[in-house]
Amino acid sequence: MNRILIVEDDAALRSSIRSILERNGYEVRVAGDGASGARELQAGIYDAVLLDIGLPYVDGWQILSTLEGKRGPSVIVISARGGEEDKVRALDLGADDYLAKPFGADELLARIRAVLRRAQPMLGPGPAIRNGDLTIDLSTGIVSRAGVDVRLSPTEYGLLAVLARHPGQVVDHRTLLREVWGPSYGDERNYLRTFIQRLRLKLEQDPKKPEIIVTAGSRGYMFGQSGPGAHST
Ligand code: CA
Figure (tube, rainbow, N blue to C red):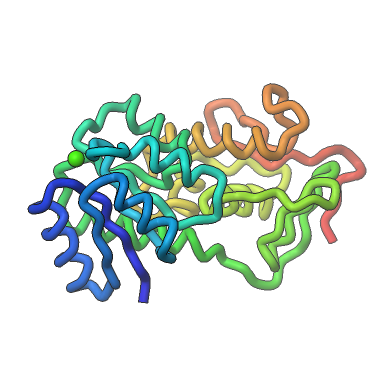
């Protein structure tokens, strides 16, 4: 059973989300302010967190920054603020998705299913893909550079794996969004920009001159082939 933490100070909203999730088979814990939310996150193991931004004591931004870079739960920011700037900031700080209030039960459940699905990357027989000193082992999900593991969030890994499965081929924006985020996505180019930027910072020698994840004009992105040395095993 998937465990979900709701960090939300609006009691009515918190209990309505809780009952929606419980009716749909999730195990739910709740926190009514940022400080107890942060404590819950340290103490418990969660698959996903629904995180409000405007919270007493410790706000959602602070909680997000403590989670950044850790292999923690998937985070869906739920916020009434809803501006594009907040959305980009949330994704930049490592959130997996952003849901503007008010939202319906179906939309909430679809987003949760999508982040949980992404958190279990499709592993299976697959080659080790190489580009320069970077290796992506599609059968284990391990990414390393010059033998050192690179830590990627589930969404970052998912995006990289879709591109790496088609080295040298352009994968268009819509296909990437559907494959990685889920079938109801397709127009969220800002998600792609944010996550591609994060991947480049982690993977590229020079993120400003990317050779691993190449922008293919306005069509999409491509996993680069680093010349004759590039090969898969
Ligand atoms: Ca709030």
